[in-house]
Image (tube, rainbow, N blue to C red; front, top):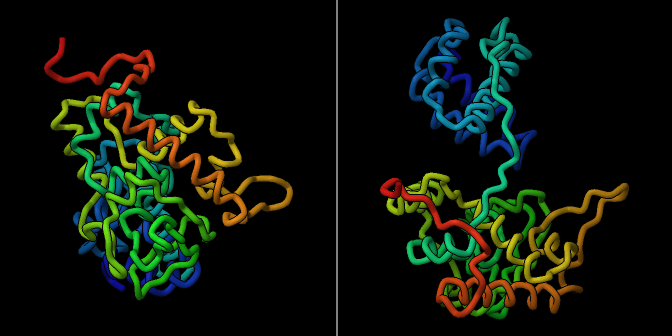
Length: 295
């Protein structure tokens, strides 16, 4: 276990996958992308705080910087516990406070962005499901052509990551979504190698969008549209697969609310299509997307 790359592999295989079965992937991807290219081949005992700062100095997003630093720190902390190291080079590095992201599409933005969205990105917007769940959507989980029965647990042999909270979710597929999904009985619904964040970044660059839209913002946009159309909070929470935070943990029986969920999904889908097709919806009283070419 001489290099940081070897240490990271040992941590993931010997600890993270065993004890953090659902949460190890995101930190793994962050370190793989932002840390290993520069520090992976260095002797782990020689890595200093200056090395960490220089490596993460190339990360422009404050939130990604904070998450990546925390992920690397976790690896070094594990190394200390296992007697590989005596100190954590991530300790003492300051991070900026990040505010909860509130970005969502306004109507004028929706009409501009929609034509360039891929089927997977459109499905996020029309179903309000998490990007990674949509990216890994399986035809085996589609029931009667209109329901996406998402298993909570991970199914490695199918490449299904499981839901974020480990709870099953039953998602109604409105007619526009069924057209995006198409036909088939097995396999991934969407192109497996599509990196949704990169695709969304490219779309924003092509449109000259300065306040970049991310895949998760499409899910947040659905929530806004649903609330605007009068969908109640419990229905929105069920569709988003939120576990209600009460003194007693609540898990919804989604089958019990099929009609309400289907009605909400249909209502939002019809609204979105009306906006993108310019069929008499309001403009949400917003300023259109700023472009770099505009004064």
